[in-house]
Length: 134
Image 1 (cartoon, rainbow, N blue to C red):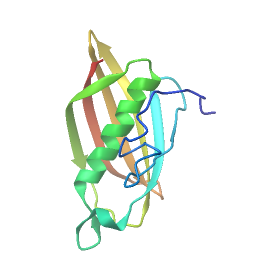
Image 2: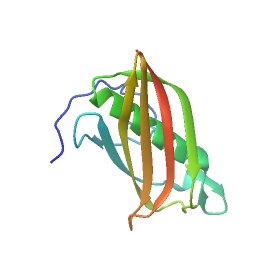
Image 3: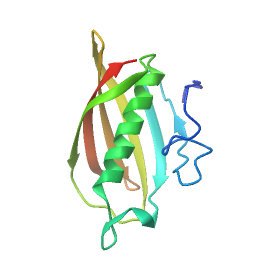
Image 4: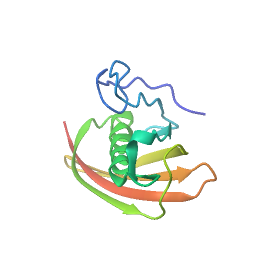
């Protein structure tokens, strides 16, 4: 069962802001403390080459979801390092699920991991990030 957790967000955030007219307006759930998940149908304006989704969007989805995992774990933070491993391409128009979790906290650094899944459950990208506590 997903936790009902209030997170502090900016209403104009490109990813999750409800007032950003050009944003994705992603909705997040928090299955447990230190975790975050969202779903997204990839808009066609994120085409990178032919009908393939631009890798920058996938990196942004991982970054945002890992940041919200930090917030859900009581560790509001800023990204200081992000590594993305692209496994398979995905076409625009397809739906993805993004999941992330905190994997460790050392002093003021929060370590996270995240995954992007196609609708059939196949992982298409994964990432790791380090965040600096705000």
